[in-house]
Image (cartoon, rainbow, N blue to C red; front, side, top):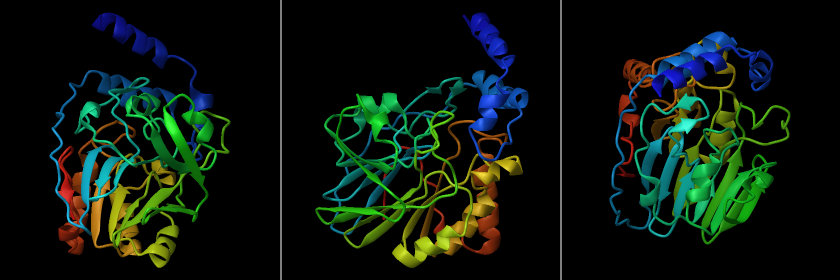
Length: 310
């Protein structure tokens, strides 16, 4: 079995992938052979680490919010009257990419949620098998150009937003914010949107940046929303050419400072090998940089599957 899998990986590694891979991202930084070796072949032999945890029921007071990092960019955000799931992905494989660390929760243990937010349609954020397995009916909020991809996934209603547009319901409001990334799921569907989300409820403001490189828009997001808690990506940024579409730890710190948020929750690291850095490098680098800048206390490295109440 292992020999067959290895043979298949070697065979796929010899394929001419240069055109589609370079077309998938505006940074044009892919070298297909090196990409295959570092992101597919080497991680294939790693033993998947981590464990699913049982979600502890949270008794929340009005104004409290429990945030659970599921892994990668997936979060469960809970108030005492509202539950939101963001970019849910419980996959062990994304095509040839092997998940290196288990999701912090089992999908079967996810409680009923009121809203599902999808930041963009890339496979590590919009995972159809995960969405299909979540209890129906589902209510989704997504960027423009994504609604057709939800067919057959059990959504009762999907609302598409443009940048700076908002949806308000039962006292909560969700807004789509700009990002520096791209939204195509395939190669030529560049009409699909992307962005981050602002969640406002019970006097709290939470920002999930989605996938993004550093850009000046973080200052504008501060001006419009003044987010208190910022969920920011820190991984998949090496080599530097990857920073055209992702943030390095130093970029994320700059974004956090621009946002003037109180709390920084790192994400988008440690689960999938999407770039050439080691999986634990982004968190180590971020801790070192934050320590030097005197803001380490503002950074909360969440343990997967363990809710933290803010």
